[in-house]
Image (cartoon, rainbow over all chains, first blue to last red; front, top):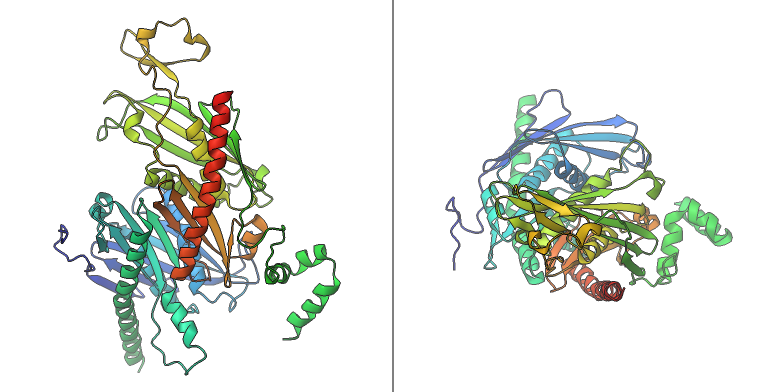
Length: 243
Length: 303
């Protein structure tokens, strides 16, 4: 019944998470996020005046630059850039700084599976660090589907290659604020049920995909708790330093 | 809050072409509220799809597809190569998607479209994930020679749903593909025999006689749906693509398996029910696409 994972984790167990903010001096916001051996550094510059060509100047524009660990960026990096850009566009409030461009630079330090989810999480923390207005945070996870139909979370590179299919999923993080009775309740419900981004590789049945969605959503609650705790502790730390 | 109402009054007075340009979103939403789309389609229907042979004489297989006015020309060229050492009995496929400046006013000569490499990558991933082609079948002599398949797709007219049209043309081009005849020379080298010179070559030199078609197990078909507020709008045109910002592309193969579910961000969050609706719409669309492709294949056999 159980699948053996090479690193001895249970199917639902994530690799150890680590996150730090403000690691670069010159950038307006930066973060490093690692899940096991996969590590990504994100830097945010901006908002700078003006938008690029073919972009709507009535809104803030985002630009994502993906730097691979080695070599030049190719098609894969271009695809990651597009996915990440559209994902971040959905969580940023674009009407606040119209006609500006914010650059997000992603540097892959090491790729050991779940690279795109790791980059989404890193970019999100870097945006918070830079003080870019956001609607909510996004948390991302990779779900892997084994041939026997089992779902495992946060796979390593080896597991990604071995398995039948995998899906990168991005969800909005759960809201912690106290909401007034009635009116906005349905909206928060919608937010919890929603899916921001989905990218899949390999064929699977429709039921298996929904199974992945459920498991992924359950796991992101833990991720979002970690994210929130991390952001809060650093905010408190900064406060005490200033005081 | 004066402005939206004012534009609403203006909208009713203006002729439709002017309001379409000045207040595109309002113009569009006024159509949605009466359950129709600006091109006259009902909300849940996709545009008509056409598929036919591409008539590219220099290619081994080609196809032309149209979805509405989005036009794609796909061509396959096969070359012999030495397979890589770690996979000695497999051939390989390379996919390239081109968006020349002819296809859309947004593409300028000299600077390639940003979306083109992304669609290439997506097409390659989808073709590999769908299990449509068995790479082992592309092997000629294990460890010595295998087919390298170059699939090139040109977008001639970009009017939305580019990925759907490109994948359809790729599926059609593989269905129409005629593998070239290969002969083994005395020095042990493989060469492709051109079509005309086929008759005067003795049969025993030919390596792949009677293996001129690829067995294609299950073709992938896709449908892109735009999400706008609570509406699910399949097969958006380029005008709709500029207004909506959230898209879900579902790829199913003919055996009903999910090959890809691609939703790159966007302001509208997809609920589980929305995803289910998109999958159901793709199922419907798949039967239509499959039917017109089957018709095109039988037509070609008759010729």
